[in-house]
Length: 341
Picture (cartoon, helix red, strand yellow):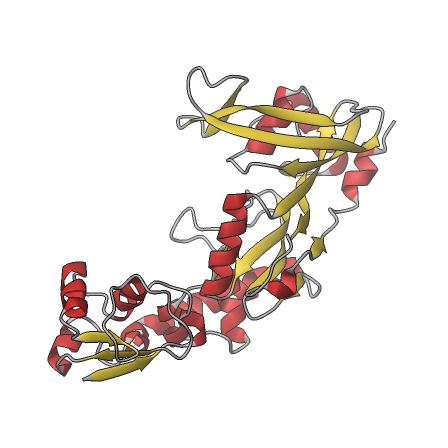
């Protein structure tokens, strides 16, 4: 027999998912059979596997040590994860130390036990595109390890990660989950569009009044770009962006936009479609203008920045974030360029 007590970072997940993590080698059919036969119980009662776990719940396995060991649960997922885990943890710490200088001492914009909000620097990926990448995901794990909030055992139960992905050359507010509760709640808000996200962009041309852009985006996998269409005649995902000018200069404008939907390259393609591409954008921008800006100001990448997030009214878990507004201004160069007459 073996007993496990559900820890705080394990709550709010389905019981069957918990069992799959603790016994990674066990087929789902075996786990459900053990649940039906009451060889695995939850709080000394028969369970279906669909229950949402609470901190302190008691999981009892009326199984032999050999059976538990065969499915990778010798001493729970904690010890199972330690085999070869030290090297992985060291890589997280290396990523944290490599990236932290670019984030700066004031780069943590908000933090609590469930959520961390950080200022992502331009040029750093949010998530891995290749095995060798060091990204904000790895920075987050390294940060938590360095601060004593994560180790091989806790990471075997839940691995914190970024929630809202930003392109490599887009900077600004990045929301990260530190707990399963945080991950579930942020994902829910993003899915329901109750978490409002605002961006600022320096764009080509003069924009004197606000408006909205609506249409359908379809991905071109060959060029890794998206195509904008006003109708869904040939498919695509419906998208919507609202915008308003902040600075209207002689050649360029600074816009603030709300990302109503969140699709790949949405803002970049929407602004290009309306004839005001983002300065420095290599995929959707004006090549000659980009070269001119690069020569005058030494810029690399598109001038797009996540500047503000507004949380909805909330109760219960994450109530501390209810109606909270997090701001992060773009670099001063945005206003300097857009003020040029």
